Length: 282
Ligand code: SAM
View 1 (cartoon, protein in one colour):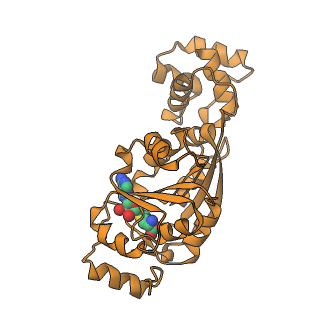
View 2: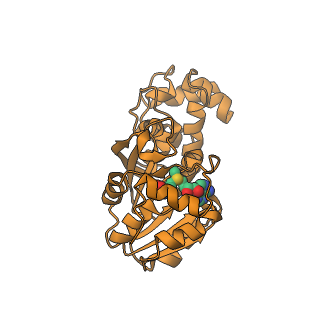
View 3: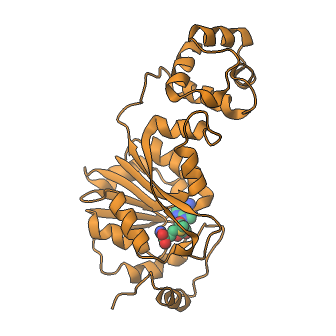
């Protein structure tokens, strides 16, 4: 009979039998409430798709993905999970495991090889220590239609923040450039083993085919955005002048030309505003 990975006693027995010890540095918090992987797989729109999962752990979310998707490729950095996954995923014929570091994996090449022309989606209960780095790669890889991940609630709120709020920042705009994001639901700490200190949120990104507004030079646009938020208390004129080495008069004149106040701060500008500013400064 298959192990019930969401029954803590059965999970603990599996881990003990394989001599597995949780690694804090690898961000290992495994799901132990069945409704969570079920709802993530539902929210991720994986039906008939190729799914890239990051960090399968013992396979709790993986099994739910395998039940719905055409095929799943799961990338796991911890090789000590190999024998456990061989046991928990034995009954699924549409899973391929790859033991490597997702940050060292060429995602577009992997998807091109494994998806075989199918729509590709990414799905994960992400290890917290690499959330931003992994999301940056997933969103900018240009190979997924949707990305659904569980992350810290606080990071999800930053991603979905409105211009002018304290959570709004360069990462908000980065995500908005690539995708429409929505927070699907929250997951409390008691849904994990071991329990994390904070609440998590499942967030879904629907990738855009093209940027939401005209942006002449993508690299320059992101430089302008980063410099604008590097010192939040500074005005845009001061932030951009010190961050990009542009003369203050040029920046003030550009802001006025765009109908904006010269003492504006970065956090009040929406993505269209940043696009217009970056295009004009270039
Ligand atoms: N998916 C499982 C679940 O929901 O129960 C485990 C999620 S746990 C939060 C994160 C997983 O990511 C762990 O299995 C961990 O070993 C793996 N991981 C951590 N760093 C990784 C990396 N750089 N590349 C691939 N996997 C990684």
